[in-house]
Image (cartoon, rainbow, N blue to C red):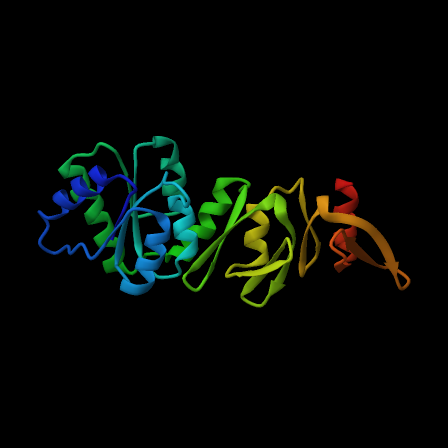
Length: 240
């Protein structure tokens, strides 16, 4: 699949790939939302994925698809190269690129696929978050729908088996990731792990109450009451 918001970029890539008889372009997508839907329906082996796109960027697309796919990032901005290689993408093409450079990227992708060393997009996404620094929004997929939640509107996050539940402005959204991973995504000066099951936006804290002899509860502005562990209380005190 070719994913790029520029018509010309898609057509050049399609033309270059036409020279490779063992490659079939099964879809072209002009934005990240189309890409997420297309991957779910068509199950491609390889993505040629632009990074800087409106609505959803390339790294967010990777975060929303959960299949074992080789990824070649394609972009006009070299500032993303280190991050792309740190997360073990098959390759990184800097526009404009030559037919020879595309052939090399294609070979890298084929090598990954033949060796079975593709990490899967979920693993790529998790590693991109570790190397990417705090995010300013969360992208959350629910079937074919994608919600974009600014982190300043997140009240708290709760562990739910293989998911986390993101609570924001009365909505409860489920994201397939771990608490440890989502904790690395968020600004540690603002979000604090108050309990193994809860990650709190300290701007949403109304007050702390004693519960029993040593236990505490965090009372949020929305009325939610969250358990605070002894270790979590120590972390909270450092930020308040």
